[in-house]
Length: 257
Ligand code: NAP
Image 1: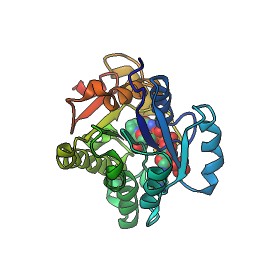
Image 2 (image 1 turned 90 degrees about the horizontal axis):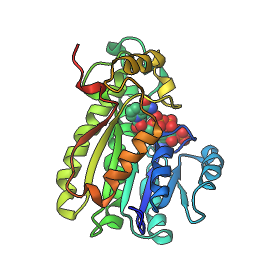
Image 3 (image 1 turned 135 degrees about the vertical axis):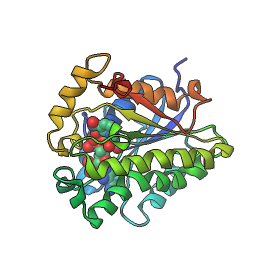
Image 4 (image 1 turned 120 degrees about the vertical axis):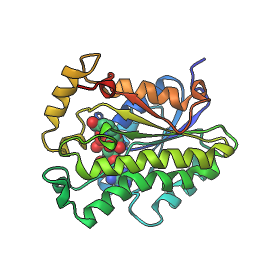
């Protein structure tokens, strides 16, 4: 039997076939999970609907922009009524204005800082709160996507590095809060991958090159590497793991000089 047979997982953050969330969806689908997706707004409905057509026919789809008041609550209310209880939640969303992802960190604006925190870090709390009634009593698992810029300075990552530091701290606090309810919460710190969001970071290609040269495995990671690790963390095989940041970065983060 496949690892995720009979499990239902909601995935936030599929924009296109390059999205890390798409790699996660592929791995979950392969292992038999039933999936629910979101699209951020009307403009994104059609592209996400087309992608969902590659998944099983009973994939559920609903609108949710984490910055729109009431959207998270509406999403989970409808999900509960139409899709049922949840065994897993994938948070694969982030946003910062392009002008905050380059230049001097000291120039970060309050607006830009707030927006990056809201979409990229606070939203994990919002989604967990919204999903909790659907996850209770099911040994559910939540994962989110972080990056090395949370703990070390990565040129141009700037405001997003600080948001990822919050996201990793949120992961630990949520794991402590939700553990007694049987819900695990973990982060994956993924190596750099060429996606729509990543291309917003100035000089992103040089980050990719450095990683491929210096990582112990001498390569970049891809969506499938992250998708398989995410599937493991969402599966019962990882039932003893919570509150952790797991690196899927070809080993880059262990290197000193
Ligand atoms: P992506 O394909 O562009 O995915 C980002 C997703 O965030 C998109 O689906 C986007 O939706 C969604 N999003 C942005 N603002 C939102 C909002 N207000 N409400 C709901 N959804 C919103 O890029 P990705 O690289 O796969 O990113 C996924 C996650 O992995 C992010 O947390 C990212 O920081 C993290 N990560 C990426 C890398 C990398 O190198 N690519 C490395 C480590 C971690 P729209 O497209 O509709 O705006």
